Image (cartoon, rainbow, N blue to C red; front, top):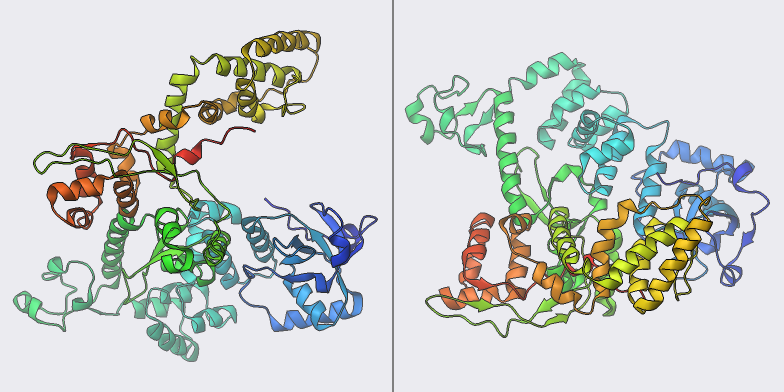
Length: 603
């Protein structure tokens, strides 16, 4: 867990504190966790916003009064501005910062931290969710923000908050309540159970019922009883109502007239809710084949997502980076009367989104590049009766794009590359020497006279050591191995710092790039399988088919736009045809999410 830096003035401002001005900061190296007294004109709000929704006016007035009398006691947390040298962004402590501005103070105590965008958001969330005075709605907001931070992983969000999944789900359910219902709960006018009962209903019905609850002082039991008598028009059901025709809860007694009667109602709200939820779960599963990750609309705050499109980030970034990225999700509405409506292409990584938008506007490349190699489709050949096609033979470097690949695809790709690496590296003299020398040096602390070799190497350095060794003459390496063994014997009392056992897979995979023909080895290792293709979305499969030349080959054999029609029929059929259609995949590997798993050679 990140330290939010919420120290008192007595501990945060000490002998090392100093007043920093823009001119002074430009001439010094700012260290992380440096405690300073910063001028307010050096500060600016965090570019990605504040995760806190609202501020209590009364408590803010108390804060201003305290600062007016005693100054700022608790340090705010800032990070160096990523672009404006000498300036800082306020990450935590916005209330203290804004109050100081309003009181026209000149300086403020600050803890300087070097944080990425994600770490900065995390610090904000920690500060805003670790308050003693959180209301139930505040807790619900915290649950939603942490769920957005972990991109829909409920278990991770619950663990971070120290809650169980049930508590997290109950708090999220409160966010389905209308604003008046949430405010009434915060004000103590209704109980949490009242709000939970109201949550599934439409906003109009919630607000109308709320007025009666307060005016007539309905108990939870009374509300539950009244809610149980609510009737739903069957014509508005999302699920198949065929089985409802003979149900005793159907108000239309004549089953033969059921299908023609738009006034037939279901008087069993519990059954209605269960069937609607089952339908929603089925639709969500189908949507995941098309969009990848699908979350409920109420799980992600509007401020925690950005609609992403080609117009925002550029065509290439959108198609090859954002499509299939694990941070690009679809949201499905589950509110009463809007069930199943999809809001697609919602980016949950605010930092990456901002960088991609900026890169598009400036014509540069985003800061989260991947090594991408896209084969040409010019050499694909087909016949009208039996197609025998080939992917391109010469990989080419394409523009870098920002993308987080789905973990299942990564696992399959990593396994293929690891197996390929084992096959070629275990017979490579340089690699074997590198492993031996690297482990000896990690174990003993010996440092060969090779350029770039780290002092006091640890287990995490192993793959770098192997790559450095593979660049040396074998005779020189052998001599160093002998010296390392001697050093190990002489320095046997040295502390065991090996820690290398957990890095072997990482070592094998990343050492591939030290070979002259590693790209060809990696391409040969990539094999299309049902497991691999099923882990992709339809959009990603379309990208693979387009890059490889499969689309051109398939359309030639089956007619213009044949592939588009195929992709529109669902993922299962698309995967089956892509595997069964006669096409030579041997010279192809995906442009993103594959080659970037191998680190570039050490220089």
